[in-house]
Length: 442
Image (cartoon, rainbow, N blue to C red):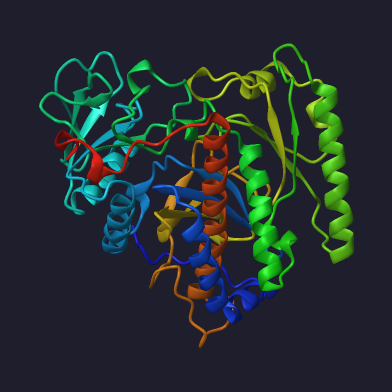
């Protein structure tokens, strides 16, 4: 696959891109101050939608599963960023336990695990894989299509520490989003760094809480930079008490959809935007594009048929949907070979380390692309997305990618704020820093 695949990004010259280019020095200074106050997540990925008049994040994933889709040329940057993340979390770490999802038959996901493990090994860590699957009772090799293999091992709990047979790690990295809840074996590990923290899992996290944190972050950023926050912030509303099987909450949902669509129409008229507004109704927790429907009229969420109700009622790991977020829909005007595309930006620590386009030949510009049939094409990075080129036009490839990186980092910062607030709510205490741990920690 050509890592220099370029989509049709020669759309309208966005005022936002020009502003970001002119203010790049101030933007980087602002981010630097923010990261002094907030600890970035170890890693994350952000789905963006670019409508030509609005560029906004529509999903923030704290357990990214597509490292295999990144261009190979960005491996050194991934390693450098991972090194910074490891030093921040566990400064003298030598061993790291990686716990993946239970998708042992998903070859694409396993390739992601292999790539992630290799990145971490190149930071100087000894990395081994522990499985939450009860059937993994002994070291079990998994073969990959490229001839590589992964070794899954059974987890071993001793007191308040988790490891493998003969392997006592300083840190545990989850690449499992805990949609099905927190297994007992992961609870009470107060002598080791657990990354991300347990409350980052979808059993506890809510998209609406992230959206509220993002809204505050964007407000501060926009005031500092003198830009219109609407250009990068999708409006949202929340509706609880939902039971799609029993048709409970339909009236609330219809009212919230109607109100948000009315707000979007007013803004479109003000800006003379001719597109038809729409919203995305999403399960407030969960991933993989499950529990999502695009809506253009409130009547579409009333009287759903059985197939629609089944689709919305339960998401990954059987997580029942009781709350939904209604999010302003953002079209994508980007295409690759005639197919609609949306950028997905990957970050480690607070660095942009690459990304790819999610492409779908059977979906339209106002539809969910995170669906069966999607393909991935590496972003056309010639340099890290944090480096704009003032000698080129604002919508030239490196500058558009820089704009992507700015918005993605705003979402990452919002995730940091979100997790800090959740930790405060739970009165959670992190383990002691690595230097003060007993010798077996390293």
